[in-house]
Image (cartoon, rainbow, N blue to C red; front, side, top):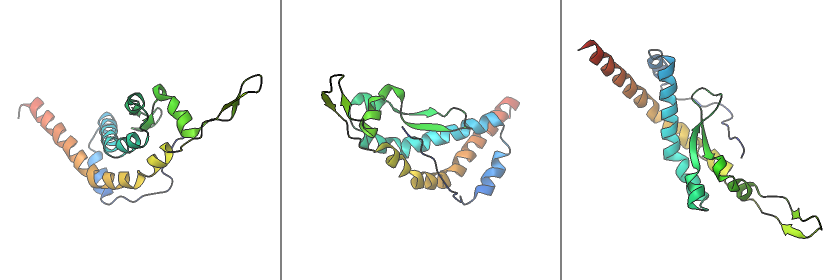
Length: 154
């Protein structure tokens, strides 16, 4: 499957206040915050759309998942996993196949639904991030403060 990426820039209102609040957190907490927030956004916006479009079997629906993206800071991968590799053929199609003797075995015409579905969710994801990120950070900060106060006995 291809790798969808947001190309360009997007301005998020109130980002300076969010960045100021993030300065108080250690790097491990920041990574956990963003990973959980991105998972929440993907579960709410992307996964239902993919499952509705790629309705082949219960096995393939189950294997449309969210996984950590390797090598990226708090990045996630959303889409079909390797357990549902037949989706690759259904989405991308195959070339004309033949036996060694030349008998035709046909081809699969791809439906090309995965990437457009993910790319179509970029604007709703940006809106979701703009509306919910500051609330999520404030929840994490409150939990951290509560935990600190509990340790200090306050």
